[in-house]
Length: 263
Image 1 (spheres, rainbow, N blue to C red):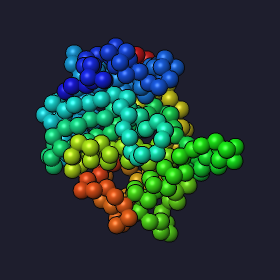
Image 2 (image 1 turned 30 degrees about the vertical axis):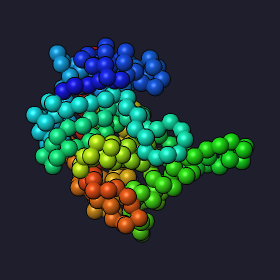
Image 3 (image 1 turned 180 degrees about the vertical axis):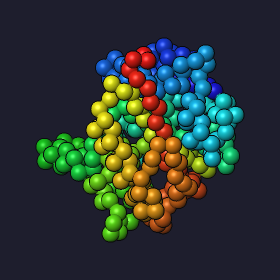
């Protein structure tokens, strides 16, 4: 497997930290936090390789051999529309030739950090900016994401206000990466790090609930939860208003557990 940033190869945790640090630098680069733990999971050995739990999760799409020759980019920005502003920053994006052809994977790592603001909070912030004569593309982007990703609301499904914004942009990024690389399959993966003594169990439950809400809406209620080790899909647009192209989408979650004492 080759990991790189700006065409410079990443072979170790130290390379990852130097070339692809988290957005807030050393404030986020700590044991038990998702940025460092993701780097450890992929670069903790002699050479970069996919963690065993993730290999098992992705096995319907990618074999261990497929992943061994995949290409990956930590802290990778993927533009999802033409609206001005910073594009989504993906913790780790991968591209591999898989069982169904070329496959794009976007991985979001979490210890107990949230999936960004909920949609209602985002909209409130955008309205305040507009009232102050400040420019914002947040409302336009959210409207596009909702129209292009989410099935029509129906009774029993979560409303848009119940969805975390980052899950929308993460999914849009996976689909955008697939289209740009002419991949027919895209996977959105949440890699949770349950580090005993370093994470807040209540916050992790909040994340699980938020992910379940998103999966329930995306699958129109056919899946109401996403337990760790589960890969759901293929999910395809359920409306002619949604524009995914020929891409089949999968959503999965994997959890790596250990104690802080192991660090």
